[in-house]
Structures are given as structure tokens and as C-alpha cells.
Image 1 (cartoon, rainbow, N blue to C red):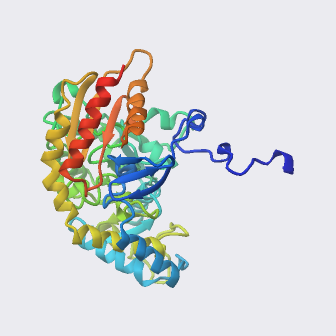
Image 2 (image 1 turned 60 degrees about the vertical axis):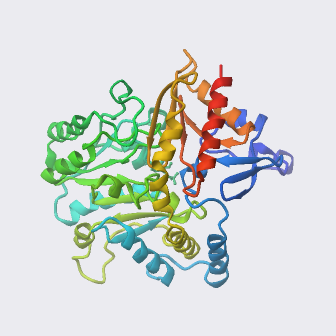
Length: 442
Ligand code: PMP
């Protein structure tokens, strides 16, 4: 490339933005330049109330001094240590601390750098686990329609979002999908778990039987599907999945990238639903979204299956240059301290009914066809405009941004998940803002 063809500094084209309509965005960029607690500051100096905790991750609110100081201190003390065949204390400390808040039995933690990497790691652990036990015939993975498990090849294969799959060819083989549980006709305007649909869990049995249960390695679900529009599970559904898995030797993986770290008013959704998976995938709230980090929790049964061979051999051929990175680990420890000291999981639990009442008060507003709330997560589903899917919800997003509110949209659904420090007054502000937007929308 010669000098003439190089892009000018600050040319917006140089940054190929993820999951963004790049050409549209660059005509009128929306830029954040600062953040504090519940608010972002825009490049033009406006305050924007964060109703989405960034991307479902900033659970303790923005720029919390305890976390930012821990990062600065660690960066000055030990910036990086090789992740393979070397260790440093903070990663061990963080893993131990995580094991104390995890559902009982999930005592072993494998570090990654993101939700997507955590998903790949969990799928690989599941496949390798069966082989470690001498059962190489279990090679199939089961996901679910409308499941989101990140963007790497395993994740989009078990995921159930057409747009995320169709550009990329054949994906992983040996994958099948259960039906999703979204049924607004029976479960409209739900609070907490959906009333109807437990029988949909038997889809796992149908698929397992179709392929022969002894070929199924694992099933992966989000306890509450987030990215495809906040789909709470039907009552009893996750328990039934657990039963079927136990009957047929299938591992159950929960993808708790959104639901982990207090979002449901419990440490993990596994606690909220009282169902313990064999593997639990997390990221986001682990470090308050501040430093990229993910963690996969594994049961003793799984860990033990890997630890049985000769001691000098590597047990699991997998890992990342930044697995357990010291700065990320320091951020994770400071984040867990913040959650604990401020009682943020309990706070989320106490706010769940307040949040539900507020959001459900939007029933009957223009274009609203469904509202769903669970934990500190909520969705307002809009009537699609014929032939223009996503247009109305995206207009709501733009209006919200212009008027000082950050929401998320997915298709025709507005999704929200405020930081757990949100006040009752701010919940009121979010809902009043949304009400005004809905009344302005075409
Ligand atoms: N799984 C779930 C359930 C998610 O919601 C996400 C991200 N929204 C991911 C995986 C992927 O996480 P990341 O973007 O950190 O790779």
C-alpha cells in the first residue's frame, strides 16, 4: 500500500465496526466519551442514562474507583504473565473466589477472554470429557432455536439465530436444535418464568431419541435467552432438561454470559431456577465489563475425568494467551468485592418487582404487543411494520439516544438490563422515557 492510499487519521472508515450498520452509523456517529455510575457522556456533552449496563455487562455501574484502581495497581505490579506452564496468584485467587459463589459442585474455573471463547471452551470440555472417559461415541451437540452463544464457530453452530449463521457455510456437523420457548399467545405479558411450555423440554428427548441418546455429548441453553429478545423459560422447563440429561448421560451447559453475576437477583440463574448444570459459561459481569474476561465453571465429575492420566501430561489441549490475565483477574476480584460490599445481588432481587411493575405499566401504549420481565431484565416487544422488520424498534433506539436514554433493540424487541445500582427513581425515568418514545413512534 503506498502513502496515497492510506486513510487519514480519524477517518471513520478505518474501524470496521462489529454488529453495526457501518455505512449508516458513519453518516451520524453516536459516540460516548465518558461514563460514571448510571450515565454515559456523549461527544456533544449530553448525559445518557444507561438502561442496558453497556452490553448487559456493567453490573456495578460505570467507572467504579475500586475496580479502576485495582486495574491501575495491577498494571504497575505485574502486567502480564505467560498463561501456559506458569501462574500468578491473582488468577488462583479469583478462581477460588468464584468457586465460593458458584452453584454447589461447580468448583473448577477455566479462564477465557469473552463469552464466545467461554462457549467454545465449554463445548470442547464437553466433547473431551466423554473421550477422557473412553466414550468417543458422544459427539453431538444440541442447542436451541433463538439461542445466542457468541460468534465463534461452535457458538454459531449451536446458536439458533439465522442471520448469525447464514453467511458462513456449513458450520459444525453433528449439531441439532430444540425448539425455542417463545409463545406470546400463551405466555403474553409474563413476569418471571413463563407459565406454559414445560413440555417443550421434551424436545431434547425427541432429538436424543432420533439420533440415539448415546451419541449426544451435551446440550447448551441460556437459562433466559437474552440477545434474541429476553425469553424467560417456562416453569419447570430447565428442571426437565436436567432430568433428561441425567437419564441419558448428556451434559447440561448453561450459558450465563448475561444471567450471571447478579443479573437475576442471585449470583447465577442456576440459583434462581434451582437447577445446577455440569458446565456454566460466563463473562461480562465477571469484570463488570471493564476488562475482557470469561470463565467456564466445571463440576468435580468433569474435572476429575481429565485429571486421571499421568501427572506430567497436559490434561486439556486448550487455552488462550490471555487466560487468567493478571489485570483481568485483578478487575474480577475488585468487581466481586464491589458486588459483595454493596449487596448488589440482593439489591437486584429487591428491585425485581419494582422493575416488573414499572415495565408492565407500558402495556397498552402504542405498538406494544408484549412485555416480559425477569430479574433485572426486561423486554418490550413492538408490532412489526409490514415489510420493514426492525425499523420501528430501531427508531425507538435512535429517539432514546437523542433524548438521553440507552436501550437495546433486537428485531422488533426493545431489551433492557440496567446496572444493579439503578435507583427506583431511575427505573421510573427509564420507563417514562420509553413511554414518551412509544407515543412519538410511527
Ligand atoms: N453467550 C451469550 C448468552 C451472550 O449473551 C453473549 C454476548 N451477548 C455471548 C455468549 C458472547 O459473548 P462475547 O460477546 O463476550 O463473546
